[in-house]
Image 1 (cartoon, rainbow, N blue to C red):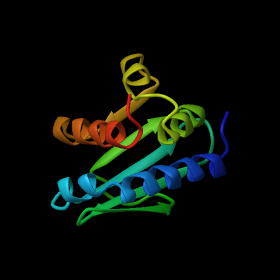
Image 2: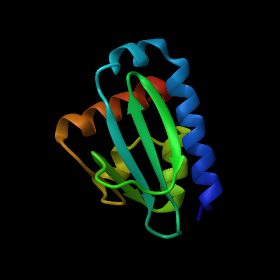
Image 3: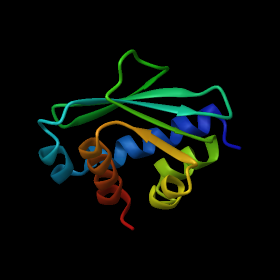
Length: 117
């Protein structure tokens, strides 16, 4: 089980990887989304805000997110550190992503561009 702080640190690593990738920032300059990241086994909620190509991470939940990502704390930390891809946990149901299909595919592509396969 990962702690709230470990999830936060993984999201900051993801943020850093994203914001260093000039291609991603250009590709997403017009894709403004709010993503809620929530653990289902520890008290941990974070909000990712993609706006004008920049990614920021905030503590806590937000109202009316465009995408909701829910999983156990260990899966979230591993996912945002790039230790695992989202495919297996998504397929076996331990990672739940609620949002439009286009948004889910774009989020998956972003993680692929940051961490590779």
